[in-house]
Length: 300
Image (cartoon, rainbow, N blue to C red):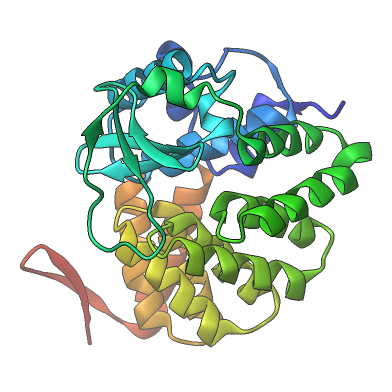
């Protein structure tokens, strides 16, 4: 079984030590020196939730309630969190639910607007066997070992046959294909996820990454910008968008996102790199930065 050190985890997921420590103190992840692939999946989810600016305390409360009422081993891996205002609700067993209030909302295909919550016997409902969720949980566990990665991909494919709009399965399968350097396949899967859930910022971020890899920079920029439009505080998306703009020779546009990244993530190696890039742009193009209505703009 592949293991990752704390240093590996921080580097791979672009995390700061304080983030990991805060999640450990909240009981969202067990404090340890070695992490499994499954742990990385859980930490990736926490990283993405951090981008929504929901507090660690609120996330912890919602996760604990979800595991209690739904009987899940790990809510962060076996269901999908969705922000609704200042709280989290969860997609599980074909429904949207708030485990704290024990309210359930059904995702009706083709429905529009916010779901209407109804009081229900949520505990009995979510404990019923759900083929898709069981398969998804199994696939996540299979991803933990390199020797069962092919089997995990097959399970994700079966999920998508059963439930074509399962965005999380499309993203996870896309990530497997990305790791196998099957970039065209990964792109199709990430696009599928964005179509299934147009408010899923991670789907657009991952799509941007694979388009960047394929040197389709204009489309990558569009994807990164969409991720930021959904979650303006998405630091990693600002970082990658800045890189993409630099590769396109649009250094003035890159500068804005380097500066936003530094504000969102002010310490650590990635922040140091962003600061360095900003300094180079300022030095090379003789730009000055002025403040206008709390916005950073470049002026010659």
